[in-house]
Image (cartoon, rainbow, N blue to C red; front, side):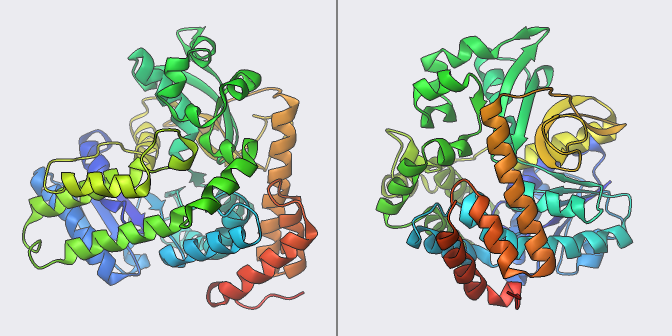
Length: 462
């Protein structure tokens, strides 16, 4: 088997490689090809990935290329994790949104819209080239905004594209951790859209384990449900994807992010620059162990401040920096598989036939009756050698239905705006997004983003 990772020069590429090497025997992995258009970053993180294979004495061939055709040739699975416009594009997206008084988060609201403008045209081009080079390959997309990108891919007729996100399965994982159960034994009932989903039930041998846990303050405080007010958890009665914080606590989120002075994109960009500088340092060259320890420390540092502004008692970036400085040079390996685990779970089930149930972004079909069959939704799926099949969800509560349909309308209008390069359609898209809901703001945001990202999005008609 060959897996190609497009975005193989990304900071998180070694995490994916480490997880893939761990499963290599089960999935019969022979080659893991890292592809990136940035030769400098590919050289750093690709070499680090190759060192992981060498250190584990893995027979898997970890290759590197800047040539997309070389990466796709003979590939069985392609994982796409790219950031068009780099870290700086994310910083620009967040600052423009905050300047207009709305959320700038990279996958949600105006920030997600801006990233979609850059990401979708590139991914559509990749999908067409993959269809020619390896028509039977699956594309597992992690490029943000994952659900919206997958909607565009599906709408273009690329039927073997699946959107992946570790957040879709966070409820199932949390229940598994709390109860000491192998998460593969659990059957979660996930429905919604990417970063807008709920877990209604988590079954184990016919018993729903979720209701008593949602009433357990100790359980909630040990998970990302702690970002929500406890009363909201009880009101909803379901596990909530943490990104719903930006909807259910919208004004609090904007105020908290605005007062920080530096949005999350700035923090991540700074960390990435520092990491690259450290790995380029002359005293690290040839010292693989030290390089891996530095990488692990920076990975743990980045994770430590995820949504920290929504979590009482969480370390600030300054506190996290101080802690990292103390830990550099020690073994701080961060083992979480994250999105790599979701992608590899799917690959393993499709390859071995060992059936799993997992939350993915796929074409709805009849799974959620209130949504159109060709809507891409985030939903529990059964995966085995027979393919990927959404689980019938049935009727969902009206508040969730209305929110899903509003955001899906925004997604469809955004895809149409990109297809036609229509500024007017883009304004219509942001107008209906629940976190914008204003013609004045939508117009200002669209014009700002089209200007800021003209290099990537080209010229648009009125």
